[in-house]
Length: 400
Image 1 (cartoon, rainbow, N blue to C red):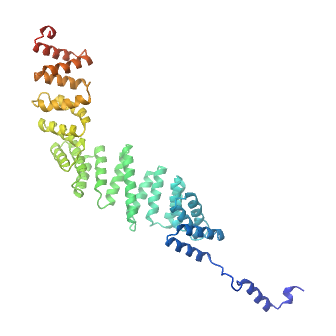
Image 2: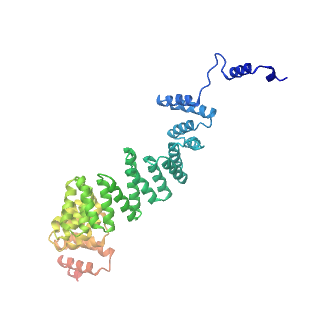
């Protein structure tokens, strides 16, 4: 007879129940959720390493407890342990249980850091599918798409961040910076239409964005869209009227439009606001010269060379064109600055030689013209000027 047949069923039931209960004084069996709560308390207390150790024990005992894998992956991510983070976050996304959108989100971030942008995009697709209003997922997918070369898709994601009503402020700020960097990269690569589109979309979605409006104006100017460039630059100045750089940009735009008076006004405003960029001084000199205001032009060009001696190369053509004026002293300083930087420049040597000859500074004229004759022995005008020089010195034989 079997034991079961020999023992009354009521007694067997009591015995099985006793086997299922812990013995007196033995520790109660803990649940995975209770252990997880302990781990989270350690995180709140600023003990991430202890929390990580406890979470590792939890997943060792309950390998299918996805929430523990998720938190362990988050901790590993925070400590830049990317491989461990990927393993645990992947485990957190597996199975038929309700999906954790944040597990997919952090998995996407880890994969992006590991330069696995295609897989990162797929993970972030899933995060957005589960939580379509979660702006950070759009931001990270936008960054992944940039790496993948999908700039159009990236732009859609970045603009979505700016459009979502509950988008966190720091996420919006990052989306704006990434978008602006993408626009500048496109501008630098000559993809002006993409740069224009990005900047226009940013301006449309931001209440005030003078820096981005300046970018848009600059791109529009490069593309020849002068009306858009002028309108956008002025709008940027409306929000930030003390921007010396934007006033200079407006000066260049007005110059392209042929309005030299407006361009001069913008240049002078930029200088008043402390713009030390040599380009604004060169632009002002150019604008004054176009109006044949030679004294003002010389003053502006001297301002340019005072800030950067290399500007003398640009000033040279102006100085040569101005030899018919009576501004000899100022022109001489311009040319002498240029010859210091470029001692063998033929045009500048000739200009200084002719000016010295006109001013009866014969020794200086001889020095410039002889140097020029050495560099360009077939230059007929040089020999003519040397002949004039020697005739003035009374050396008729050499002069002839």
